[in-house]
Every structure is written in structure tokens, then in C-alpha cells.
Image 1 (cartoon, rainbow, N blue to C red):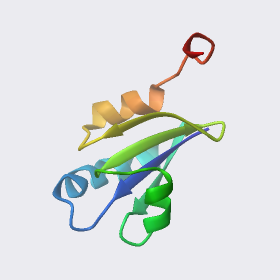
Image 2: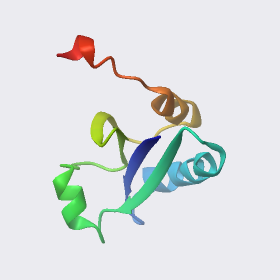
Image 3: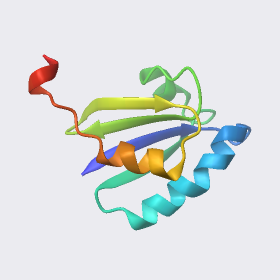
Image 4: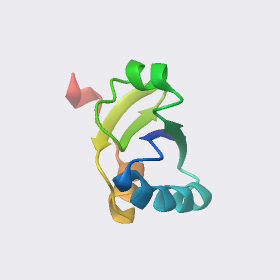
Length: 92
């Protein structure tokens, strides 16, 4: 299963637009699980992942970051993120 770290904040307008979509997908998807991370309360985690802008989505598979995207995302863009597959062999 893929995990998507969704870095957000209550005061962030693009985050407010994206959060309902994330919550819907979290209930519908079986291929991925979104984890909502508030950058104001999880400062160390945001620093560990070098989050410089929000919203930021970090796709994790097999305990490794395989992709990230920043900015408000549409439902279609988030579905594409869930479906993303990195060709590790060709990336070396």
C-alpha cells in the first residue's frame, strides 16, 4: 500500500480547497492512505521532509519517498498521484 503524506495548515487557503478531496479519497481508496500532517503542530516532521511550501504531497512506497508534488491539487491530479509508479530500475 502507498502512503501519501499531506502537509497542510489551517490558515492555508489552497489547503482548505484540497482537504475535502483528500478526505473523500481517503474513504474511497484502497491503494493508498493519506496522512494529514499539520505543519504547525508537526514542525519536526515537516523539517525532516524538507517541506518548504504547502500543501505538499509526499508519496511513500516501501518506506521510501518516490514522488512529491506541491500546491493545490484537483481530484484527478490526486488520483494520478495515487496511480504513480516509479520505474526504479531505469532511475539508477
